[in-house]
Every structure is written in C-alpha cells, then in structure tokens.
Length: 321
Image (tube, rainbow, N blue to C red; front, side, top):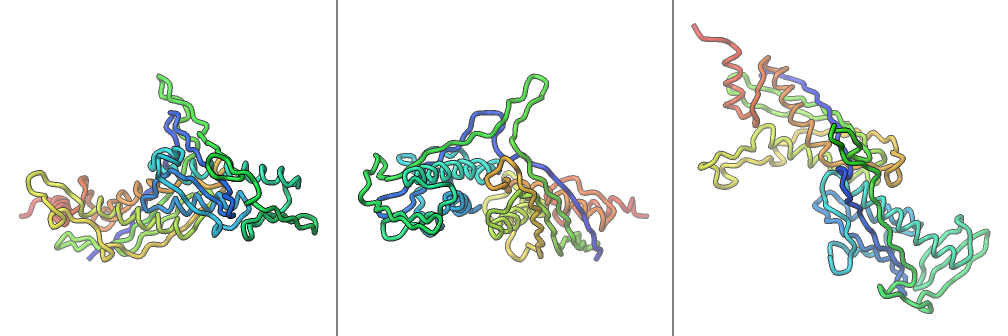
C-alpha cells in the first residue's frame, strides 16, 4: 500500500456568457403582513431558495420568518434564468437584493422617514421606529395592487459582460471564483485499488451567505467528482443499470475539510460569488495527481478503475524477465 498526495486548482466564471440572460425578482408585502418573494430559479439541491430569500431579507431589513416563497411557477413568477453556471446566488441573488432595497425605499418614503429607520411587521401592520419614535401603519387599510401587494417592487439584474469578439477577446463573465483542492489517498500496488483518505477544499466564495449550504455544495461536488475520477463509466452494450454503472456512496467519500475564503466581490450581492462547478473541476485532477505521486505512473483515462491503475503500474515496471 502506497500513500500519495495530489493537488489541483481551478477558476470558473459565475454568471453570463456574453448573452443577455438577466434574472428578475418580484417582492411584495401582502395586507396580512406577509412578505411574498416570487423567485423563479429552480432549486436543484444547492439551496438557492434559502440563500436568495436570505439576501432579500437582509436587504429589506425584515426577518426571514416573515417571507413566503412562490417559485418556479411561470404563471406568476418572473424569469430568473437557468440554474447552471454557478449563476443563481450571484445573479438572482443580486436581483433579490435590488428588489428588496427598492421595496424598502418605497416603504420608507410612504412613512416619510430616513434610511436609518427600523421596520417590522406586527399583526398585519407595518411598524416604523426612528429616533425614539414609533409609528404603526395598518396594512389592511391600504389599497392593494394587481398582485395583491400593498407595497411591491420588481427588479432585474444582468451582469456587466461583453460577448467575445472575432479574436476571442471580451468579458464573458462578470466575476470568477477560484479554488484549490488536495487529495490524499492510498493505492494497493498489487490490486490497483484506490482508497481516498482525505480531501481538503479551499474555495473563494466572495461572501458565504449561508456557510452551511456552501460546505454542503462543496461536499456534494466532491462526491460527484469521485465518481468521475474512480468509478463512473458507461460501456455501450454492457452498461444497463446501476449494478453496472457505479456511482459513489457515502462509504466512498472520505473526510472532507472545507476552507471558505471570503474576499467580498464588489459586484455580487453582499459580496457573494457563485459556487458550483468550481468544486467539481479540480477534484478528479487532484485524485489522479495523488495516484501518480503514490505509484510513480500516470493514469491517462478516467475513471481510474483498479484495472487501469494496475495496468499503468505494470507498464511502468517494464517487461518482465
């Protein structure tokens, strides 16, 4: 058994690819004192429903418990764009921040108070506190708009990008995330089997809106990439089901140490960047580099199954006498 350590890094753009692809958020206060968030981004497990609502709550200055989410309904919810390219926290989150700030400004103007005023919702009433004064406005007494809101706002965000020209020059993404990962593993030199020991992942997230979800995103991306590196392979004519196409289980995932590097980005919502593909990309190269460190041979085809690892080891030893 030989131990090896490998490292790999990556950068990945968050947001658009030089095409108009904005996100739009609708936000409003209903007469019963509920904050309704219309959010069209589809949450595929990365936690966008939570993160985007958190961004809106912070910008509005009201607790997350006051929010009700209405999402992924084309009949009532504005388009938030595709859930891909690490764009939802960055782009739709920015649209949510803009909509919440616009809604807050509208409420402050109605109450004729400054930006320093504190807002709260109590029993279908808007309560404003400023300079020791407290004012209560009955929401039920105010007229509602076509969406059923007594206060409402709709805002969009499209990142500042430019398409690539004929020379490949331009700004296809508004911001980039960076990451580096270290894989530690053991290789059985007789069998070619690989046992992962630990993966350390450091990622520049700008600002972690929800650190727990960011860590979960990293762990999920690593688990997916382990399949790419070591076991997932489709063989035409032979692979028929998940008995033949192996995917990682929790037993295949080693200890994961996460390092969230927070350098707020001036463009992102509260400084946040995206985090998705950034984790998947460097994991497999780090694992393959660790296999090379342990064995002294390079596996050039993924997944690095025991058969391929053993073939590489035997080829590296040269012909037998």
